[in-house]
Length: 385
Ligand SMILES: Cc1ncc(COP(=O)(O)O)c(C=O)c1O
Picture 1 (cartoon, rainbow, N blue to C red):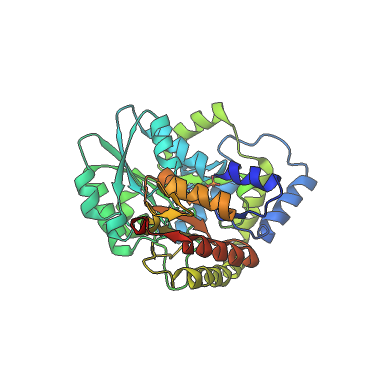
Picture 2 (picture 1 turned 90 degrees about the vertical axis):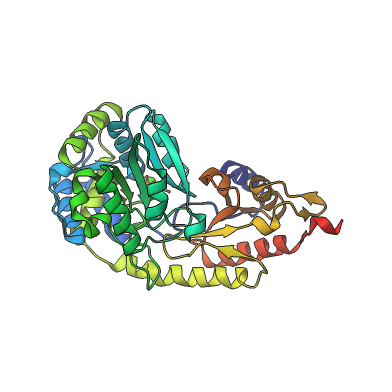
């Protein structure tokens, strides 16, 4: 969808891109200053594969403070974004034939990485449970081959945030069955007012020996292109990641690491504090277009910057005489007819919904929502014909 949107843009159309998974903001000031400083100080050489020792130390300290569970530098790996941290975890922990529970709708990469490691993703549908994995659903999905469980909160694509009780229940179950928990919290600083992000280890410290925490600077500091994130895990897992990363990509960019070091050392909340009211305003704006639509429903929009909209009422109906076959077709029509790019839920294991990002420039958001609603207004019931 993204490449089709770009092709359309190149032909001169004004395309509103709701499909991007990144903030429209400039990067956080500390990141920029740290990177510039690193350039001036000629930090141009390789670093150790798992990152600068000082960065690993400071990250360990910060994660210990925010989770209440002690981590040391030997339990931290700095990676080229959260994506590499997640990939490393799959590669070093999974064997062919292992099963991994993936709550669905899911970010497209989770099942793909599981498959790349030779393992089997087991999708667990969360739509009936307010788009959050429940203890009961995990219990039902566990088999003797289950090795790992993925949890992503705040969630991409749904925007939901897991609640304390729910997470604690899942943690207990993982402990009981000896499952690895791959806990992706890369949107943790992006929650809407009143919604609280919980870290699974804060709720269940005993789970530390079987947990990989994954976090990133991409979303929280608006530096998706800089490729820097990290994993925290037991030292032997980090040591295996060292072997893998050392022979694949080596260290993440030295400049991005120095930028990350400047940011975590400063420990400033200013950027997140600036984002929070902006994202709330944007969400309110997007909802003001959606809520009046009869039959519209979306996942609880509590974090990240996504609205995950159930488009079932429009599937099978007619747009200018053409039957909307499925969610991919709807997304394609939105792009070609309304010049609005969205992410179809089919890539997230869900044929009923689409994801839009509301982290756009305010005028873009208004224009995009206007076109989206106008498009849906032109859809007619197929049984009228
Ligand atoms: C849930 C989730 N995890 C990880 C990532 C990857 O982030 P990074 O840019 O740090 O690799 C994304 C990016 O969209 C994401 O949505």
